[in-house]
Image (tube, rainbow, N blue to C red; front, side, top):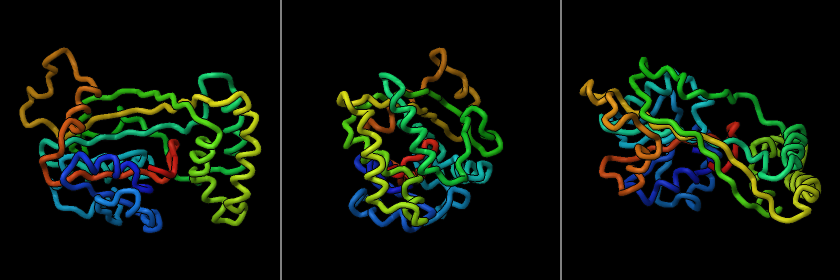
Amino acid sequence: MGAGVSTAALAPLAHRVIGLEPVPAMLVHRRSVAPSARFVIGTAERLPFAAASFDLVAAAGSLNYTDLTSALAEVARVLTPDGVFLVYDFSKGRSSLTGDALTAWFESFEQRFPSPPGWRPLAVQQLPLIGAGLRLLGYADVEIAVPMTLDDYLRYVLGEVGVDNAIARGDDSAEQARDWCRRTLVEVFLSGDVTVVFRGYLATLARPAADPLDDVPRTGGTSAPSRLSAPSARPCSGPAWLTTSSSDGEQGHNTS
């Protein structure tokens, strides 16, 4: 679940939205971030919910930290027969559309504020889906270019978990971390705003089709955008939607 932003984004689209988070401290801002959602302490490997409870389960950068076999089986268990499992993530904003200055800066940032161990690369197409009772419906790579001022980027990068860890260890105070980032970023933003590139993916999964013919493409194939558009078109009519997101990720921004 992280800080709850992914959960908050789904709140207007469903009758009930529940965020799952294994670290209680991450829920401190839940009431201000997603006031209409419910939040539960738990792990993906042992979801504290009854079978067939959710029409949608969304995992934002969280599967990278799980025991995949257990987590996927649990997702399949709590999905309704027609439910959808969305898996998505974005890389860190470490590059821009113009020049290599931001990339070079981010390398120095990661040396000063390294991320904690635990994150593992995730290849959705290679997930053990069959044994878990899931199937892949669609997959799409995504690239988003975001124009950012120095202050915009500073707020973003100070949310990286490496900064939090450095402060928690006593290596830096929050003020020292902010000062170092601002001072070293000035040259990157010397000419004004920078368009930062975030790369990621969206994958749509579901439980196996009841009718074998449902697996046969009716229009020449499936595409992630068309399958993903349905949940956002109207409020969910089923029991609830469950969201899980990482408080880090390679992908690891501490605002999901």
